[in-house]
Structures are given as C-alpha cells and as structure tokens.
Image 1 (tube, rainbow, N blue to C red):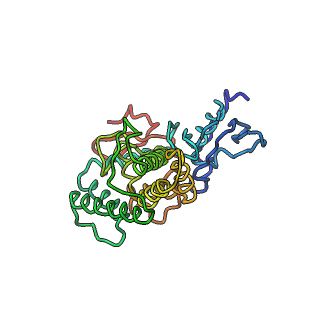
Image 2: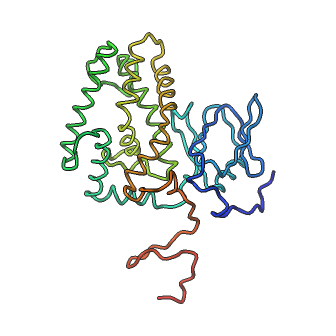
Image 3: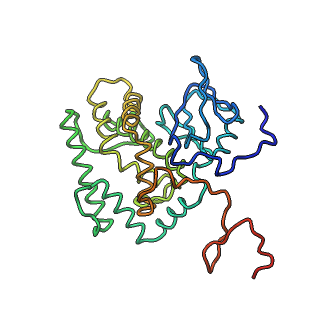
Length: 317
C-alpha cells in the first residue's frame, strides 16, 4: 500500500489525547498498516487497531513493524517505543506523543531555577512522606530523611522474609560477587528504570534533566523511579531472595513485570510526572489533555511573548 501523495491528518481530524488509549503493548507479532489502522498479526490471526486512538505503542520482543505502520503512527500524533518484555527494559523510541514543547520547556525552566527545582524536589519527597510536612526542609535534610526511610524499609522486609540484610552493595562490573538480595534489587531496579524511561520519552520529557539526581543522562529516570521502589521493587526483590530460584535476575524481572503490570504503573507514572512539572495547571485537566496537537511553531521574541509562526514579517520592524 503506497503512502506517496497521501494527505497528512490535521489536528481536528485526530482523536483527542484525553480520549485515546494511553499505552498499548504488543509483542511476538508483525505490525503493519491497513488504511488508517495498524494491524498486529501472529499465529492466532490479525487484530486491527485505530492508529489515532493510541497514545503510545510499546513494541516488545519478537515484533516486526513496517515502514508504513511507523508512518501512520507518526501521522496520527502517536509515538512508538521499543521495550523489553512487558515494558521491562527501554531500548529506543520514535517521536514523542507530545506535539508541543510546553512539556520539555516546563521541565527545563523548573530545573534551571534553584527555587523551582527545590519545589519540585520537595514535592517528590512529599509523595514518599505523605503524612509529614517537608515544605521547609533543605535538600540536605531531605536526603537524611530519605536515607532513614529506606534503611527502615530494607530492615522491615528482611524481617518479613527472613533474608539476611547487611546493606546495599553491588559492583556493576561483577554481578556474581553480589549476594542474592543485592542481585535481586539490582535486577528489579533495572526493570523499573526501563519502564519509567519509556514513559518519560513518550511524554516528551528529558530523561537527563533531574531534580534530585543530576549529571547523568538518566537523572530524571532515577528521580521518578525512586517514588515507587518502596512499594514495588524492594518487596519483590526480598520475596525472590527468600525463595530458591536458580536464576535470580530472570525471576526478579518476571516478578516485577507482573507487579508493575497489575499496578498500572504506566498511567500512574504519567500522572505523577504531569503533576510534578505542571502543578496547578493540571487541575481539572483530563488525562493526557496536555498532549493536544500543535502543528505550527511559534517564534521566540526577546521583548514580548512568542509570536505566531508561519507568518511573513518582512514588512514589520
């Protein structure tokens, strides 16, 4: 099916972001295009999926996608992310679902101003300490509070499972030297990082611009992942370490995969990122409404608000 000469969709013709399926995961199939739908074909048959109704298409192991399908997803204002099994690892992505720079600008503006950066960092800690007032704490005080919390969580799960806990210790270059619980924690956190990374790039945010973490290309990934470790990866790791698994890494990834899938982490992660960086702007906003298509860029002005693009200013100033 040739796409040469095909007219691209206009924003009004597309499904509103708030009305789309947020994320769709496919694996072990061939993804193609049939008119304005993408198709997923495996040994059981073919399923048609309206492309414009999908926010983010996640492609897992065993998938093959055609050029025509990718072109359709791009035209539909959707993004495609290549991930591991059930989103456990992030590998690469196509265009972001967002067609406005508002999201990345909000992140850049917040992280480059000390006051707003501290505000976002405090909000992240508020999520971890819902019953405490951290609005006046410094970053140093927050780090101490967080360190105490994490040590307590490790101790509680060690007592619950009977796993001996002597502290977090691992060597990235020598996996085998770590004890079972540290191997399980490393595998669980790696899975979580991949999932969070895929959400961040799908939302049009930068994985590198972190608020608590800094200096690494995944700083923001680590920021967001830390919000969920206490309830997701740490319990999972201790459960696996308490068992008799011969392949701790693989078993941990499967355990975390199922826990994250059942807990709808993708949607929750998207809402948390939205709230952290847009704050009060999101009050009363439908899910994913901030993805609405904006096809014409504005022009920056050093003295005024941005001016419309696509206009000739030859006879102006």
